[in-house]
Amino acid sequence: MNTTKKEIGETIREIRKERGLSQEELSKRMGFKDRSGLTKIETGVNDISGEALAQLAELLEVHVGIFFTGKTCKLPEFKIARYDERFRDDMIFMVLSAKNALGKIPSINPDLLDIKSNYLDRGDMFWVALDGARVIGCVGYETINPGEARVHRLYIKPDLKRQGVGTALMQTLEEYIKNKGYKKMSIHIGDEKYWESKLFYKAKGFIETQPNILERNLE
Ligand SMILES: CC(C)(COP(=O)(O)OP(=O)(O)OC[C@H]1O[C@@H](n2cnc3c(N)ncnc32)[C@H](O)[C@@H]1OP(=O)(O)O)[C@@H](O)C(=O)NCCC(=O)NCCS
Image 1 (cartoon, protein in one colour):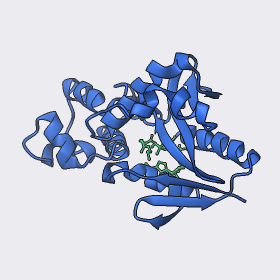
Image 2 (cartoon, rainbow, N blue to C red):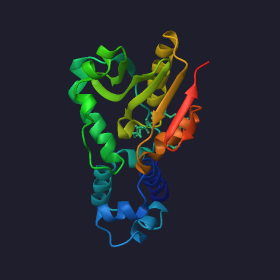
Image 3 (cartoon, rainbow, N blue to C red):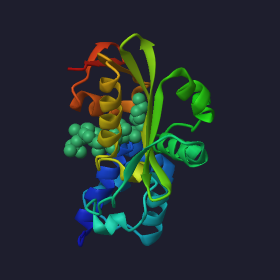
Image 4 (tube, helix red, strand yellow):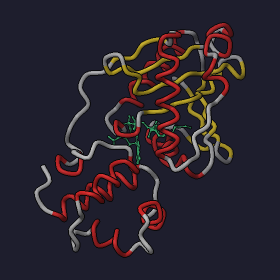
């Protein structure tokens, strides 16, 4: 539980960084003239008004309560399921909100509109992570060479990052392709706004073999 303005400020900073936003960028979105106001809030020098907290919650796509609980509230149980058409719209909504949280203008990847034709009918696979009936994550792969799976569309709902959902999706994918005899996984990372995925894949043992292409051999 956060009880001081310093602790609230630290939570704001932590979530801002997870969203890949600089102090300058977030200050601009909040309508501040420069970053000094936000610096003072994040370091606990200045108080933050309820109105500004509500605005921050909207911009960072979190529930306002997280500023008071800190990032200790854990995700309840979630499960991984193979993609099914009934998940389509909520999955697209989740991906758009994940892109928005990265500071990108959300756009729909055409392959997500038709997972059946673009993945399943080609012998590849796609999964979603579910919290109850809601989609909170997704991932799929495409066979780009015999025995090589290119990972696509790993996205986690913004306020549920760093709670192991990405790991669980990747474990499911890895186990599935290993059983099919694949020898390698690879990923192409987009622009610099995807910095956290680079850290994620490096933490999972992927190595950057070409600019923005990361690979990992399967045992
Ligand atoms: C990248 C992403 C999928 C990771 O999913 P996640 O559920 O948050 O990841 P996990 O909780 O399983 O993290 C596993 C480990 O990866 C590393 N990691 C993940 N996010 C990180 C971050 N922002 N900074 C540093 N390390 C990070 C850590 O080692 C972490 O373990 P830890 O939390 O015990 O330290 C998620 O941040 C996301 O959806 N980002 C936006 C979309 C995106 O970039 N997709 C990839 C497109 S190529």
